[in-house]
Length: 274
Image (tube, rainbow, N blue to C red; front, side, top):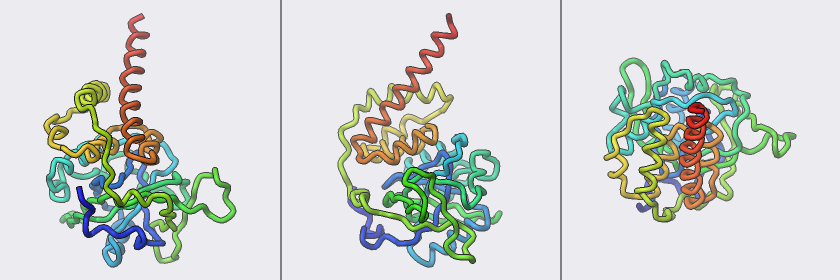
């Protein structure tokens, strides 16, 4: 996979970035994230970024909320090669009735994780009921710069940098993530082992999957990225996947998370039988 000619160069990444705080949802470089945008301040944010670089940062708040199953359907739909921006029934995060999406209305001083990922809008659609359906393509991770006077280990807090901007803006630190803009070969994946782990994992979480979708993703990095984004891991686990320094460590962590889920479920079942 060659670099997208529309993606920015590392030196051209912005100094100020609007963010979309989403709990239980991460964006990875070269991953695709469909979003259903309906709240006025975030619709305004989408309008604003179209006037500049079309880039939005996805960062998890510290608050723990459950992961919506619609996130799984949304990302798999896009990886299948369809256009999620035109499929309202299965191709977006349904923010209208999912309790996990109440993070869209979190207080503007809600603490954030230190690392997020910037995405560029690659698909856009206006819906008649007054919503936007967009898809973000992951570009590069960043660190949220600490507020002056905060300690290195304190939760990060941000506030609007302009009085007339209702959404949150941050000053991203891109240093250390230059390789995110490069195509780096993923180590070979043992797909037979992976499918076995996924079958157990999806059965545990009562998730139905069209397995042909996975087989149609030939690129190992794309497959790993899609799974890291769509599997309903906890917020902390997803954050660990996001912060993995390279594709090798991210793959190793993904396999470990799938194995641990199967192991602990088996242990709980064994205890219940006795």
